[in-house]
Length: 256
Image (cartoon, rainbow, N blue to C red; front, side, top):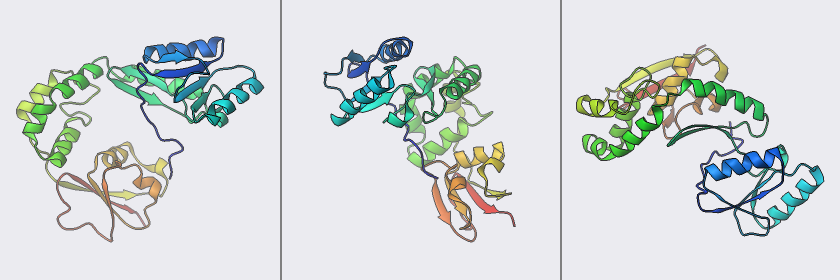
Protein backbone atom coordinates (compact mmCIF):
# COMPACT_ATOMS: atom_id res chain seq x y z
CA UNK A 1 0.00 0.00 0.00
CA UNK A 2 1.55 3.30 -1.07
CA UNK A 3 1.60 6.46 0.99
CA UNK A 4 -0.67 9.19 -0.41
CA UNK A 5 1.80 11.78 0.93
CA UNK A 6 5.31 11.73 2.33
CA UNK A 7 5.22 13.34 5.80
CA UNK A 8 8.03 15.85 6.31
CA UNK A 9 9.01 18.35 8.96
CA UNK A 10 10.44 21.44 7.28
CA UNK A 11 12.45 24.07 9.16
CA UNK A 12 11.18 27.48 8.05
CA UNK A 13 12.64 29.63 10.84
CA UNK A 14 14.16 32.71 9.25
CA UNK A 15 13.19 31.57 5.75
CA UNK A 16 10.73 33.33 3.41
CA UNK A 17 7.26 31.82 2.97
CA UNK A 18 4.71 33.45 0.67
CA UNK A 19 1.28 34.02 2.21
CA UNK A 20 -1.59 35.31 0.07
CA UNK A 21 -5.10 36.16 1.22
CA UNK A 22 -7.14 38.04 3.78
CA UNK A 23 -9.60 36.95 6.43
CA UNK A 24 -9.84 34.25 9.10
CA UNK A 25 -8.15 31.48 7.09
CA UNK A 26 -5.18 33.67 6.18
CA UNK A 27 -4.90 34.93 9.76
CA UNK A 28 -4.76 31.34 11.05
CA UNK A 29 -1.97 30.47 8.61
CA UNK A 30 -0.12 33.66 9.56
CA UNK A 31 -0.22 32.68 13.24
CA UNK A 32 1.12 29.23 12.39
CA UNK A 33 3.97 30.64 10.30
CA UNK A 34 4.80 33.15 13.03
CA UNK A 35 5.03 30.32 15.59
CA UNK A 36 7.42 28.47 13.28
CA UNK A 37 9.59 31.58 12.86
CA UNK A 38 9.00 31.96 9.13
CA UNK A 39 9.58 35.27 7.36
CA UNK A 40 6.24 36.00 5.68
CA UNK A 41 6.57 37.63 2.26
CA UNK A 42 4.41 38.60 -0.71
CA UNK A 43 3.93 36.85 -4.04
CA UNK A 44 6.81 38.55 -5.84
CA UNK A 45 9.42 37.47 -3.30
CA UNK A 46 11.71 34.50 -3.81
CA UNK A 47 10.54 31.55 -1.70
CA UNK A 48 10.27 27.76 -1.90
CA UNK A 49 6.89 27.51 -0.16
CA UNK A 50 3.62 29.41 -0.44
CA UNK A 51 0.23 29.33 1.24
CA UNK A 52 -2.74 30.63 -0.73
CA UNK A 53 -5.67 31.49 1.55
CA UNK A 54 -7.73 33.46 -0.96
CA UNK A 55 -11.50 33.04 -0.69
CA UNK A 56 -12.46 33.53 -4.35
CA UNK A 57 -12.01 30.26 -6.26
CA UNK A 58 -10.91 31.78 -9.56
CA UNK A 59 -8.51 34.21 -7.92
CA UNK A 60 -7.03 31.44 -5.77
CA UNK A 61 -6.57 29.11 -8.75
CA UNK A 62 -4.84 31.84 -10.74
CA UNK A 63 -2.47 32.59 -7.87
CA UNK A 64 -1.66 28.91 -7.44
CA UNK A 65 -0.92 28.60 -11.16
CA UNK A 66 1.42 31.59 -11.12
CA UNK A 67 3.32 30.26 -8.12
CA UNK A 68 3.62 26.72 -9.46
CA UNK A 69 4.93 28.09 -12.77
CA UNK A 70 7.85 29.49 -10.74
CA UNK A 71 8.51 26.12 -9.10
CA UNK A 72 7.05 27.14 -5.72
CA UNK A 73 5.38 24.40 -3.66
CA UNK A 74 1.88 25.56 -2.78
CA UNK A 75 -0.71 24.89 -0.10
CA UNK A 76 -4.16 26.16 -1.11
CA UNK A 77 -6.49 26.42 1.87
CA UNK A 78 -9.56 24.15 1.54
CA UNK A 79 -8.57 23.16 -2.00
CA UNK A 80 -6.72 19.82 -1.69
CA UNK A 81 -6.70 19.26 -5.46
CA UNK A 82 -4.50 22.36 -5.85
CA UNK A 83 -2.09 21.51 -3.02
CA UNK A 84 1.50 20.33 -3.33
CA UNK A 85 1.58 19.97 0.45
CA UNK A 86 -0.90 20.12 3.30
CA UNK A 87 -0.61 21.54 6.80
CA UNK A 88 -1.43 19.00 9.50
CA UNK A 89 -3.17 19.44 12.81
CA UNK A 90 -0.44 19.67 15.47
CA UNK A 91 0.00 18.44 19.02
CA UNK A 92 3.07 20.14 20.48
CA UNK A 93 5.16 19.00 23.42
CA UNK A 94 8.34 20.75 22.32
CA UNK A 95 10.58 19.39 20.97
CA UNK A 96 8.06 16.60 20.28
CA UNK A 97 5.55 17.44 17.55
CA UNK A 98 2.77 15.07 16.54
CA UNK A 99 1.30 15.94 13.14
CA UNK A 100 -2.05 14.59 11.96
CA UNK A 101 -2.91 14.75 8.29
CA UNK A 102 -5.82 13.50 6.21
CA UNK A 103 -4.46 14.45 2.79
CA UNK A 104 -6.92 17.32 2.72
CA UNK A 105 -9.90 14.96 3.09
CA UNK A 106 -11.19 16.44 6.35
CA UNK A 107 -9.64 19.17 8.45
CA UNK A 108 -12.38 18.54 11.01
CA UNK A 109 -11.32 14.93 11.44
CA UNK A 110 -7.68 15.98 11.91
CA UNK A 111 -8.77 18.54 14.52
CA UNK A 112 -10.84 15.95 16.38
CA UNK A 113 -7.89 13.55 16.50
CA UNK A 114 -5.65 16.36 17.71
CA UNK A 115 -8.03 17.11 20.57
CA UNK A 116 -8.09 13.45 21.56
CA UNK A 117 -4.30 13.19 21.50
CA UNK A 118 -3.96 16.37 23.55
CA UNK A 119 -5.59 14.52 26.45
CA UNK A 120 -3.34 11.47 26.05
CA UNK A 121 0.13 13.00 25.71
CA UNK A 122 1.55 14.24 29.04
CA UNK A 123 3.21 17.59 29.56
CA UNK A 124 6.41 15.73 30.54
CA UNK A 125 6.82 14.28 27.04
CA UNK A 126 8.91 17.23 25.84
CA UNK A 127 11.26 17.16 28.83
CA UNK A 128 11.69 13.40 28.40
CA UNK A 129 12.74 13.99 24.79
CA UNK A 130 15.21 16.68 25.83
CA UNK A 131 16.75 14.41 28.48
CA UNK A 132 17.13 11.59 25.96
CA UNK A 133 18.91 14.03 23.64
CA UNK A 134 21.24 15.14 26.44
CA UNK A 135 21.96 11.50 27.33
CA UNK A 136 22.92 10.44 23.79
CA UNK A 137 26.61 10.15 24.71
CA UNK A 138 25.90 8.01 27.78
CA UNK A 139 23.49 5.82 25.80
CA UNK A 140 26.07 5.32 23.05
CA UNK A 141 28.70 4.43 25.63
CA UNK A 142 26.36 1.90 27.23
CA UNK A 143 25.34 0.42 23.86
CA UNK A 144 28.12 1.07 21.30
CA UNK A 145 26.50 -1.19 18.70
CA UNK A 146 23.79 0.73 16.84
CA UNK A 147 21.39 -2.18 16.50
CA UNK A 148 21.73 -3.12 20.17
CA UNK A 149 21.21 0.53 21.13
CA UNK A 150 18.03 0.75 19.07
CA UNK A 151 16.69 -2.47 20.58
CA UNK A 152 17.45 -1.32 24.12
CA UNK A 153 15.74 2.02 23.56
CA UNK A 154 12.79 0.34 21.88
CA UNK A 155 12.32 -1.98 24.83
CA UNK A 156 12.67 0.86 27.35
CA UNK A 157 10.14 3.06 25.53
CA UNK A 158 7.51 0.32 25.22
CA UNK A 159 4.22 0.48 27.08
CA UNK A 160 4.77 -0.10 30.80
CA UNK A 161 8.58 -0.05 30.40
CA UNK A 162 10.91 2.33 32.31
CA UNK A 163 10.76 5.05 29.62
CA UNK A 164 7.11 4.64 28.60
CA UNK A 165 6.47 8.06 26.96
CA UNK A 166 3.00 8.31 28.46
CA UNK A 167 4.14 7.84 32.06
CA UNK A 168 7.89 8.48 32.42
CA UNK A 169 9.45 11.81 33.35
CA UNK A 170 12.96 12.98 32.41
CA UNK A 171 14.44 11.62 35.64
CA UNK A 172 13.63 8.09 34.44
CA UNK A 173 16.41 8.26 31.83
CA UNK A 174 19.20 8.22 34.41
CA UNK A 175 17.56 5.41 36.38
CA UNK A 176 17.20 3.38 33.21
CA UNK A 177 20.83 3.92 32.20
CA UNK A 178 22.04 2.75 35.60
CA UNK A 179 20.18 -0.54 35.45
CA UNK A 180 19.54 -1.24 31.78
CA UNK A 181 20.54 -4.44 30.02
CA UNK A 182 20.20 -5.45 26.39
CA UNK A 183 16.79 -7.02 25.72
CA UNK A 184 16.81 -10.77 25.19
CA UNK A 185 16.32 -12.19 21.71
CA UNK A 186 12.82 -13.50 21.13
CA UNK A 187 10.65 -14.82 18.33
CA UNK A 188 6.90 -14.15 18.46
CA UNK A 189 4.47 -15.98 16.17
CA UNK A 190 1.47 -14.03 14.90
CA UNK A 191 -1.27 -15.99 13.18
CA UNK A 192 -3.41 -13.58 11.20
CA UNK A 193 -7.14 -14.19 11.07
CA UNK A 194 -7.42 -12.45 7.69
CA UNK A 195 -5.51 -10.25 5.23
CA UNK A 196 -7.35 -7.17 6.55
CA UNK A 197 -5.20 -4.77 8.61
CA UNK A 198 -8.29 -3.84 10.63
CA UNK A 199 -8.28 -7.35 12.09
CA UNK A 200 -4.90 -6.81 13.78
CA UNK A 201 -5.18 -6.65 17.55
CA UNK A 202 -3.51 -3.80 19.43
CA UNK A 203 -0.89 -6.26 20.71
CA UNK A 204 -0.13 -7.52 17.19
CA UNK A 205 0.13 -4.00 15.79
CA UNK A 206 2.44 -3.02 18.66
CA UNK A 207 4.68 -6.05 18.12
CA UNK A 208 4.96 -5.33 14.40
CA UNK A 209 5.88 -1.75 15.17
CA UNK A 210 8.66 -2.88 17.51
CA UNK A 211 10.08 -5.80 15.49
CA UNK A 212 13.67 -5.86 14.24
CA UNK A 213 12.74 -8.33 11.50
CA UNK A 214 9.67 -10.04 10.11
CA UNK A 215 9.65 -13.58 8.71
CA UNK A 216 6.48 -14.06 6.68
CA UNK A 217 4.76 -16.38 4.26
CA UNK A 218 4.54 -15.14 0.66
CA UNK A 219 0.76 -14.68 0.89
CA UNK A 220 0.94 -12.10 3.69
CA UNK A 221 -0.21 -8.85 2.02
CA UNK A 222 1.97 -5.77 1.78
CA UNK A 223 -0.56 -3.76 3.81
CA UNK A 224 0.15 -5.98 6.83
CA UNK A 225 3.92 -5.79 6.32
CA UNK A 226 3.67 -2.00 6.13
CA UNK A 227 2.64 -2.02 9.79
CA UNK A 228 6.21 -3.03 10.68
CA UNK A 229 8.90 -0.39 11.14
CA UNK A 230 10.32 0.90 7.88
CA UNK A 231 13.82 -0.29 8.85
CA UNK A 232 12.69 -3.76 9.98
CA UNK A 233 14.12 -6.50 7.74
CA UNK A 234 11.47 -8.52 5.90
CA UNK A 235 12.06 -12.13 4.85
CA UNK A 236 9.58 -14.14 2.77
CA UNK A 237 10.16 -17.74 3.78
CA UNK A 238 8.29 -20.97 4.62
CA UNK A 239 9.45 -20.80 8.25
CA UNK A 240 11.75 -18.68 10.43
CA UNK A 241 15.36 -19.88 10.93
CA UNK A 242 16.41 -21.68 14.09
CA UNK A 243 18.41 -18.62 15.10
CA UNK A 244 16.42 -15.56 13.93
CA UNK A 245 18.91 -13.06 15.35
CA UNK A 246 19.05 -10.60 18.25
CA UNK A 247 16.13 -8.48 19.34
CA UNK A 248 12.50 -9.07 18.43
CA UNK A 249 11.58 -11.22 15.44
CA UNK A 250 8.05 -11.84 14.23
CA UNK A 251 6.89 -14.99 12.43
CA UNK A 252 3.86 -13.95 10.39
CA UNK A 253 1.37 -16.11 8.55
CA UNK A 254 -2.32 -16.18 7.71
CA UNK A 255 -4.15 -18.92 9.57
CA UNK A 256 -5.69 -21.46 7.23
